[in-house]
Image (cartoon, rainbow over all chains, first blue to last red; front, side):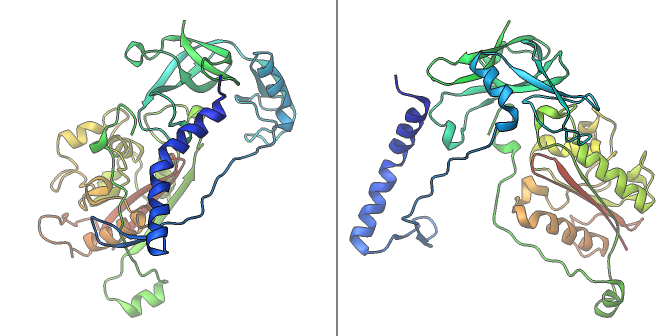
Amino acid sequence: MSTVVEKLREYLDRAEAEQIRQLDQLVAATGLPVYRDPKTGALIWVDVRELRLRFQLSVNRIAKFVEGLSQERLYYTVCRRCGARYFPPQADCPRCKSSDMEWREASREGELVTWTVINVKPASFAHNEDYVVGIVKMPDGFNVTAWIDADPSTLRPGMRLRLLVGKRPGENYITYWFRPV
Amino acid sequence: MAWPLKLYDSSPITDGSAAVILAGEEVAKKITDTPVWIKAIGAANGTSNLSKREDFAGLEAARLAAQRAYRRAGIDPSEPVKHLDVAEVHDCFTIAEIMAYEDLGFAKRGEGYKLAREKQTYIGGVIPVNLSGGLKAKGHPIGATGVAMIAELTRQLRQEVERGRQAPIRKGMALAHNIGGTGHYAFVTVLSL
């Protein structure tokens, strides 16, 4: 089974292949990566260099969250000074500036607040079929944004959704998402 | 594009430019006989994280920015339209204009649509809005959009706009509402003659 990283790479390579082939032909023919836009007649320079960007973010101070995921559990933080609750967890409280946080395990059922269907995807999600993203109000005192595995025509505001943690079908890394109860 | 919004609910990202001459009082009086003054600016931030918002029927940053601008301009926040001749609001999407009416206090929460439906935001209504066409009809050149609002309102207040698009100017005050990001920062500017 190919990984989510490989799948995405293959999709993007396929999508870009024809463009790259044309660019190579253009450079071979004229010595320059320059063409005239057929609609406006304007000269367009196509950069032959390509940027690839992969972010790396420190999760060192929310290690408990990462450990929880690997055990298919979800943790959030509560500020011991002002009581603000954070999911995904934060190590510092932006509300009162305290760093004295308590870790708690999140409930697994909430109420649907709002949702949308993503038809036109960003490049890094382009290998997916249309998907539903929603915001769910949890009894712990925060909202969770995640994909909803459901036919969007069956969704209603206020309906109960279950928060699942694990390897989503077709992928091989652990994440969390919702499904109707 | 994401449901329930559709293509024509969205403003087109376009090329465009706008310019204003921003000057202190002394310089302004030297270079023009018809200055338009910045009466007040209200600025505010909210959270960029949608899941952390109290609700999705308005923008906290815009509501705060409006309150601050009204206080500085001496505008009654319960009835701001009483003080204003014309406004430009950030209608990046159809729903955004209705939310702007409510965030600015032009209408009660949940009743913004009535202003448009009853043509109260047209010339002759209680508060003409987006006589420039707004972002949706004239385009949204992101960097120029805010400045274009100030340029348009300056011309409106000076009664220099072409016929058919000129608001009646009786009170001498106009309002620009501009938001950015996911609606997590907002500026409300009140201009006066």
